[in-house]
Image (cartoon, rainbow over all chains, first blue to last red; front, side):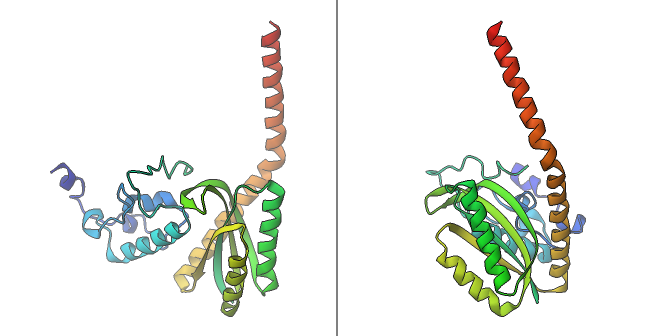
Length: 87
Length: 144
């Protein structure tokens, strides 16, 4: 229940901030749409609109190829904190 | 001419001069293929999200430039040959919205670099001084 309530109020955060373009180097803004295992969160949980979800997906994939965001986190190789150099 | 952005990750094991010469070589590749470098963003050594070729850290460098689309294949080929490059990412900014974003990013990085340049001549002197004073204080403490 607690999980569900967390995502109850659905509105697009990116629409509210009036973001036109999401930079893949700005990891802090992507973090919202990533799960704790660095999967891309579905729209039904984050409440992103389709337009922004597409943008987020593209920039997350770019950030992954640029080694800014991990592809996966396994239990064996625990990444200490991939965002440690984000200030 | 199309707007592009290149992110290159250089091996962090190189010395500073080697990294600098690598970056100069990369810029040379772009300019010699008819590209126009607008602004560069030096992100410095940071941790990689996952190890690449057994290195955990990398030296990130971002270059914003305009270039004829046909030359991109050539610079990517040159990057692949270079073994000191861990990774490169080329991003195309094509649509109106993306070009606007590109211009915004360029303006942002220009501001950033101007700030660091302003700070740079002052900051090292300051840190050097503080370091000296700290050392002096430590020495005094030891004497006492």
